[in-house]
Length: 224
Image (cartoon, rainbow, N blue to C red):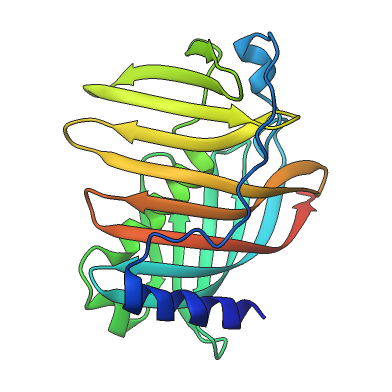
């Protein structure tokens, strides 16, 4: 079924571009009065756990599309991630270590190495989705009718975290500056491995020209 969904997305990309969202949009929920600290600590990085996530993904960049299955070991205490990607046949195509500042190529299939910047783009996407930037209690809180916003001025631009829903949970991270223009959307949260984890994620980097869509297949907490 997942491969069928990806095929339909690829078909839709060929016919009408790649702006569709293959996930359910959260139901609008009325907000209430709360402090910025109450928005923190609801997601995967709340209390220093290590998770192993199995995901399927679709990476699109400059007309090239890569369908993959991935394993991510997300170490929230160390603020690091290890990402192994495989193709439809189960062949390893890359192995990356990611921190808030660095992407290390442990392995990259020679065919992919011929595409400049691919590993850096994938590693950067994982960094923005799971590691950094993250909302902080010092961010400026704005409460709207159906969403909460935490804003921060940084690097000559504005970084915005949008929360919503009954919990509420992080729904969108947006960075806009002279040098950067990207957004991460989080969808279909599920309570897995003792935490709220997004069942679907879309990262779009308009400046660099790539898009990563992730479907969460399985998650478990790792005892280390």
